[in-house]
Image 1 (cartoon, rainbow, N blue to C red):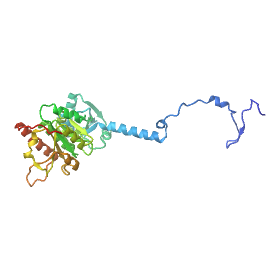
Image 2: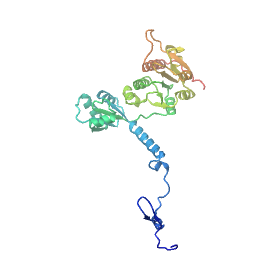
Image 3: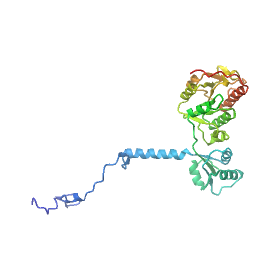
Image 4: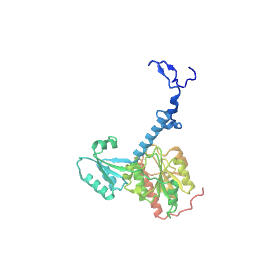
Length: 320
């Protein structure tokens, strides 16, 4: 009857048969779960899935930031060239030769960790490429800010000389350009972030260790970087087969310079060419159509260095 406190609740019919309600007594046993968590923390929520995917992508990028250089000859050459490295991987049970022995010796002398792993593990780490049982882990290259490169070049006591690369995608060419910059008095190299080779282990090896002594600036926009160089008082000279001036007539070689080198096939891009103060052609025999980008850079830098050694009169930099 109504008002009877002993009543346990109405009888509820369901597929399981008649059931007696709690009469509201179980409400006392409920415990709150606290505030609703954000969407990213709720399992199964679309925002949580997106967050997890982003985290996996970020972790993957961090894991792949360190490059693995593989092969007996490349690893031995990289260690001879003093390429920075954090670990040397060797597959268990591989047959050793003089290259393996040399690599282990150099790694030991430099304090590089020597890790012996199964061949299956090395296959996994190298993505299944032919590694010959050896791999060298190289950390990401430390690029320099452009303003720092310009400042150090200005404080060097000689006219600044930089090299900018437009569309050079072969890391071996990049390494060779860095090596030439060091040989002929260059103060730095400028490369764009996109559509350009970065300083990988291959570039390190090609530079024969010069990458440790020549600062490399990686910029988001090459045209803007060249304009910054002009604002700092440097002339921008682009190499072009149809250039308006021949290299052997480059009178501004003793001025502060940025030499811009384009790709072997495409040459300088339109915007980069329009940014140059002058375009220069390397005199060649008619039978030769073009030069490799790194060779063209070396020839130009050698000519600039020769003119500077000859003590040609240096005029003040142009007002910008």
